[in-house]
Length: 325
Ligand code: AMP
Ligand code: MG
Image (cartoon, rainbow, N blue to C red):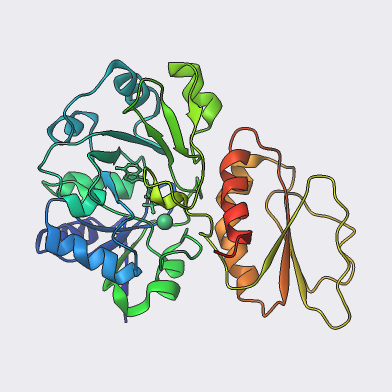
C-alpha cells in the first residue's frame, strides 16, 4: 500500500527528494492537480511514470522547475514573450512549450523538439523542486484518461500500489491542469486551456491562437478527445437547456454550476459553486466528478458553464469527460 506523508513536515521533503534522486517516482501536490514525479533527466525513472499511469509514450510530460532561472539549461531560446509570461504567471498554472536542448530525454517529450516547462506555486512542490538538483517530470497522478486527482487520497484511490510515496499538501486550490501555451511559432498557440485564463495571457502578449483540439494533434497529445473521463456515461447539457427527467428506475446524477431546485427525481446532485464563481467551480470540478462516479449512477448530466476565464478550462474538461473515444 502506498504511504501518504505530510508535505508540511520537512522530513517528508528530504525523504521524497532522496527517493527521486534514487530514481523512484513520488506523487506530490501542485496548485493545479497532484503530479506523479520523476527525475526528468533520468530515463529509467521516467519510464516508471509512464508505466504507473499506463500512459502511452506519445503523450509528453511537463517538466517542473523550482526557479525562473532554472529554465535556460533546458531550452535553446527564451524569446521575449516567454520572459514576459514567466514574469507575469510564474510560479503558477502556466506551462510554456519551448524549443528543447538535448539534455531533456526524448522519452519526456515524446520525441518532440520542444519541452513543456512549468514552475508551480504550491509551497510543497517548490520545496521539493528546491531540494533536488534536477527538474521533475510530472504528469497528473492518475491512470491515463481518468479524472485528475486533487487530493492525496484521490491519488491513492486511483494509483494504489503503483506509487509508494504520496506527499499530502491538502486539496489543490486551482483544481484544473495548467494552461499549455506554445511559443514555437510566430504566434503563440493555446494548446490546452487551464488554470491561467486565455484573457490573462492575451493581456500580457497580445493575441493567442486557440489550438484545435483534435484526436490526432501530435503537437499536444494530451488534447485527446476522450480524457478526464469518469466511468459513468456523461450527458453534457447545452447552455439554457432544461434538465432531462430521469427515466423509470434510472439513477441520474447532476453536476451544476450553482445549486438547482429543479433536479426532481435525481439520485445525486453536486453544485460546483454557491454563486457561480468559476474559480471555485474549477477547484471543485474533479472531486465532484469522482464522487458522482462512485455513486453507482446510470448517467450524469453536466450543465455547461460560461466559456470565459476559467470556464474555458472547465468546459474543455467536461466535453472530454463526456466524449467516448
Ligand atoms: P499532463 O498530463 O497534465 O501532465 O499534461 C501534459 C500535457 O502537456 C500533454 O498531454 C501535452 O498536451 C502537453 N505537452 C507536454 N509537453 C509538450 C510538448 N513538448 N509540446 C506540446 N505539448 C506538450
Ligand atoms: Mg493528465
